[in-house]
Every structure is written in structure tokens, then in C-alpha cells.
Image (cartoon, rainbow, N blue to C red):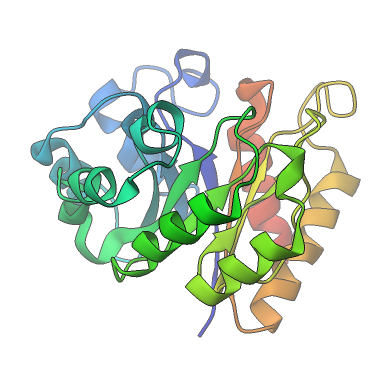
Length: 244
């Protein structure tokens, strides 16, 4: 059955200590605690540096059997190589320990830089390489030129999810059903939501999530609120709205 997975981007954030995390909780216990409050977490540290296989295993073992991680792919493929000759770097990243998550591995998120414009040829090769891995993948395109029906067709043919972002940064809003799952990142515009998402904002995203599940797609929704202090509260509010 399709399911909704709701959580935050990351779990190590000092201002959450004493707010989301109980006072006195050791940092080593924060992931396990977070996994009792949300149903998924997007691992972000993997975007900036390679993680040890032992770290992937420890994260896997810290959460319940029904918990699922999304994994943000290392920036080398998209930011450094800018999607050129992607096969080797994709394989190297996935073989670096990511698969140690086992059944708790959900989608792999590939975040493209905002100055990387849509190029049909580059995307054809990149998406083809992703499809060949046998894993779920999502692409967060942040250049306006990706709002292109050619990209929608390519993503659909590859079974790769086009990430839907809620942001005021001018990134494209791609609410396209291109895969058997949907992926949304809720950045929460500070001018509109200075204290995190309000009730109307939560209701809007709850309705979107229900539509995905009703259409037979798993839905992965991560609160990456610009004022990150509010991300856990937003995630819990969204989860509660879906369960009510």
C-alpha cells in the first residue's frame, strides 16, 4: 500500500536540543528519538562529505524496522561535474556505504545547483544512469529552465521523481507525477512563514500528500524550513494532520 513519509532534513541541529530533543539527551541518542516522532529523515551530511560504511550501519540500526531514510547524494556529480559523464560518480557514491541502509533506504535525492540550466542531452544520460541502479531517485532542479515538458517526459520515462519545492527563491515549481512516488521539500518562505508553517500551510501540504497516496504513489515530504528551528514542529504538525 502507498504510504506517506514525513520528516526533516537532518537531525543534528543544536537549537533543537531542549526543544525537539529532551534536555539532557545525548547526541548519540538524537536519531533514535527523532525516529519516534517522524517517519522518515533526509540524510544531508552525505551531500558535503563521504560517510563511512559504519556510519550508514549505525543509522540503520538506530531506527525502527519501518523507518525509511532519504539520502542526499554527494554534490560531486551535480555541482562539481555538472552532470557530465555521470555513470562513474553515481556508482562510486552508491557503493560508498549507502546500500548499508538496506530496506531502510528510500529515495536518493540529487540536488542540482541553481545555475545549472536544463540540457536535454545531459539529463538523458544522467537520468538513464539513475534508472539503471534499480533504486528510487529524485531530482531537485533549481534553474527555471527545468520547467520544460521535455524534462517531465525524460523523468517519467526514467521513473525518477521531479522534486516539488515550496520556496520563494524563484526555483521552478514542478508538481509532476513522474514516478511511482512523490517527493516534496518544504522550505517555508520566511516572509510568509516566519515562525514555521501556519495551519493553512500545513493543511495545504496535507491535502497534497493525500492526493499522492490516493493516486497510488508513496509520498516523501521533508521540512527544510528556512528558519530550521521550526522544522520538527512543522513535520509533526503535518504528520498529525494526515493521521487525523
